[in-house]
Length: 120
Image 1 (tube, helix red, strand yellow):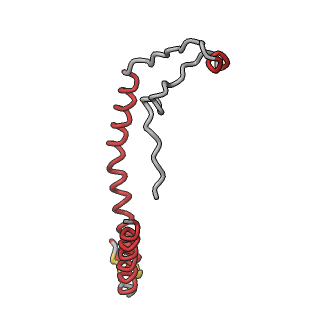
Image 2 (cartoon, helix red, strand yellow; image 1 turned 90 degrees about the vertical axis):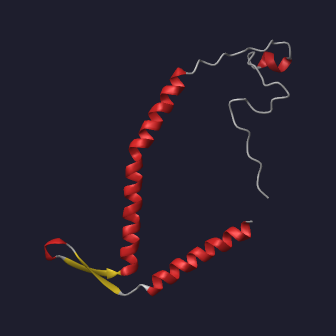
Image 3 (cartoon, helix red, strand yellow; image 1 turned 180 degrees about the horizontal axis):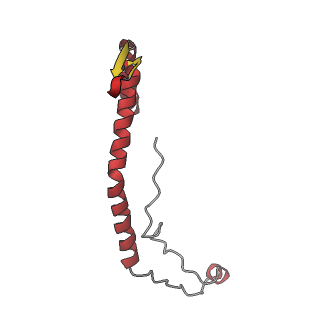
């Protein structure tokens, strides 16, 4: 699967590189009020792509802010966590100040995701 991913990435790079080499001729841009500029076409295409990405991100900012505000309100509405203290019967618990420990069947706290296994 990794080989297929790298082959796809290489193919995309090759296609974009070939596009850039085939479009190195100068293009004249005619702006308003008689202003003109020349640049290689690949740079103009790259600049327009970057401008489109920036406009897309800026268009999403109000939505992101609204979602962040809603998430903060939901966190405020959650009840506070109840701390359960384990009995200080064992020597380890008495040294740690009586803080609760996870039962043996719970390897991770229930509110935390389990760590990912490393890929092969």
